[in-house]
Figure (spheres, rainbow, N blue to C red):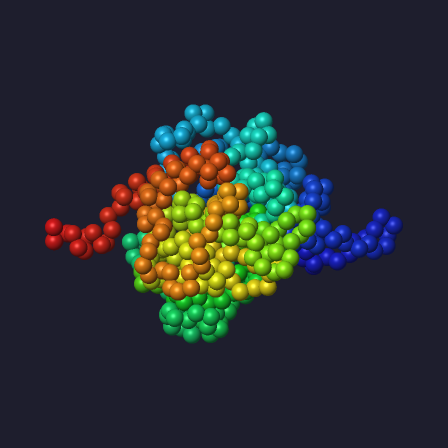
Length: 477
């Protein structure tokens, strides 16, 4: 019988004892004693000690489980968190300085994230780690710590944010040659998937076996999917997660991306979280629903006792209207991200808000007062979930601290005329660096490091000659 299915174990008296609840937990333990028992009970051989880099890519080390539980010191070079998406490094300047010694940062496993890795053939587990300096100080520029820093600013005010992400992604045919455009996959019908299948059950059913694997892999890791739908794009799906603690939800998105990619590869297709993978198809978003709880009363501070909207609700929106354009590089981090943000499309290029208005950047869904929330519709699915949540919550917090007044809600289409957001990666970086209030909340060291990485990525992109240039410039200029 597989280890995870054991229900009872012999007691020291020869009887039968109940299995402790923590052993059956799919996700997380409280301490190292429980971790050792959890791993042994499942017969785990290897541990992936992982942490998200600036792009949200899993970095870390793998080791035998016995070494993991023997007080082994884990470390990663600091350069891991200063690397561009293409593997390069930024130049010094504008507050960023590459460490001359490239010293090690210590990995601290967060045992509440311990879970199995269901797609591995050998019994394997994974745990998400935080980073600290050798003297124990938190590393300011690592993504999980950036989000923790923002949450600490809320905690000082007796507040606790609650979030619920929605992640869109595309399934595409395997494409090992980057010079060729991506194309939709073939579903169970044997025909290539077409667009215009928003909320289509038949569209979801085209990938029944793959979706079953996503659910199975997720259940084995203790990841909860609220709903799954087919979006408008050809082979575009969306997963909605249940609301909760921002760190836990960012961890889930981080793990979901790995899970979905692995499930897709099992079926010989790719899953991509690029913001705009296919020309002429809708982009992929990571919408973020946000509310704030008073820790003493447990009440949603966006709603008064009589159910009406509070000043904090309007100030939160006001802060987002003013500062999200400056934080856009954390919500739309790549050149490709800006291909999604276009006029007359479902992705907003404005900083307006409205009640149940999907053409605005900040939508207030219909709900009862206890569930009143603000949906940020700007982030793309290529964003690092830790940084996207940190940026969005930081902007709302600045609004509440400074009592920034929200503009009147928009009652009509808001995405056809004005463009309130940066239109390019470099413009977004400039605005990010200029916003000192935002930089103070997310951390000056992180802000300088992240801006330097994004400038370096843009320069790498500029080295590539596109098909558009060859088509229209080759013989015409």
